[in-house]
Amino acid sequence: MKSRRVYAPCCCHVPRKSWVWFVWLILVLVAAACAGSKGTGLYESLSYGEKKKVLEELKKNWQDYNVYCDGPVSAPGALIFDPKNDGRNLIGYRYTKLSKEESVREAIVWVEFQHDFNPFLYRIFDEEKNFYGYVLLAKDLPAPRRVDQNTLEVPTFVSGFHVP
Image (cartoon, rainbow, N blue to C red; front, side, top):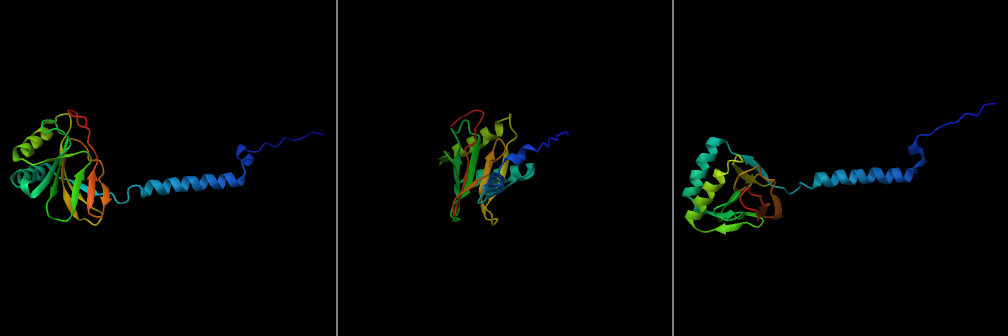
C-alpha cells in the first residue's frame, strides 16, 4: 500500500489568532496613514500671470502682512505673507520675521532668482477654505499642518543656498 503525502501550504501552520492580529495591524496602519493628513492646510498654486500681479501687490502692501523668511534675506528659499488682523496665523517652522521694506523686496528677488527651481506662489487655506496667506517658495510646497484652531505652520524649506 502506498502512502500519500499531503502538503499543506505554510500558512496553515500559522494559528488563526495570529492572522487576525496581522489583519488588524494592517487596518490600523492604513487608518493612521489616512488620518495623518487630517487638519492639514490646503493650497493652490497661482499661474505665472497671477503670481506676478500678486507679488507686485505684496511688495506694495507689505505692511499689511506679517512677512516671514526661512533664512537670511540674501539667501531665502521661502517667504510667508500672513495677513494681519484676520484672526488667523500662517507661520513657518524656524522662519524669521522681516520688518523692513528693503528686506522684503530683497528676499522676494532672491527666491525668484533660484534658477535651480521654478519658484511658485501659493494661496494657503484651511479645511473650511478660510484664506491664511501666501507662500512664495523656490520648490514644491510641503503640506502646511494645523498648530491650533487659528494657526497653520509651513515646514522648513531646505534652500539650495541656505540650510537652517
